Every structure is written in C-alpha cells, then in structure tokens.
Length: 125
Ligand code: THU
Image: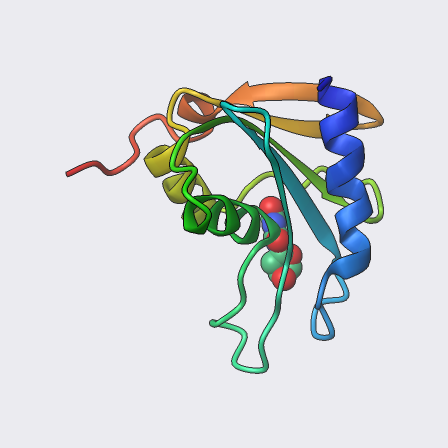
C-alpha cells in the first residue's frame, strides 16, 4: 500500500465524520504490520470534551481488534487543510506506533513525519 493509497482512504473517511459542531471533517487510515487497514473519523460530542479525533478512532479500532502495533497512519481533512495530530493523539501514537510515521498533505503534497519528531518527549511508564 502506497502512502498515496493510504492517504486517499483517510480522505474518503471524511464522509463518515460526525462533526456537527466544528464542521471540520477529518479521516484517518492506518496499516498494521500484517497489512490490515483500520479507518477512523472524528466523532464530536455536545460536551465538546468527549470528542474523539479521527486518528484515535482508527487506532482504538485497530487495538480493539488485536493490533497493538502499527507503523503508518494517514490523516486527511476534507478541505485539504493539513491536519497535524493533536497532542492527545500523538500521545496515543507514542503508545502504539512510537517508531512509526504520520502521513499528511501539506499544500497538496504528501509528507511524512516520524511520531518522535512530532512528539519528541512522549510520556512512558
Ligand atoms: N480533529 C481530528 O479529528 N484530528 C486532527 O488531527 C485535528 C482535529 C478533529 C477534532 C474535532 O472534531 C475537529 O477536528 C476540530 O478540532
């Protein structure tokens, strides 16, 4: 699976986003070590604080299906904005894909960042 293919899957997940408050629709797609793909979208809540980002939706789906390690996740926003993962999502990436990469689109061009680059001092026990 190429980065572009994974990113396109992430972009297609924007259609599933539940974002009636921000109207900012985000999709994510990750690929596990055995090649399984898990997708996610942001799921907002009237309390705002209970909102789940697209990245965490995808990661929690993967972990809940028995995949606690993956290497690549793509994140897309419906309007082409570069959706850099938030701090909470980065901390979850630190848990399950600390040595992995995040694929994003900056000004129409795919880029990848190491998780450790976006979160150089993640918390570990
Ligand atoms: N959001 C994501 O799902 N992922 C990101 O990388 C950035 C932010 C969502 C959370 C919220 O539903 C909306 O975008 C606006 O912050």
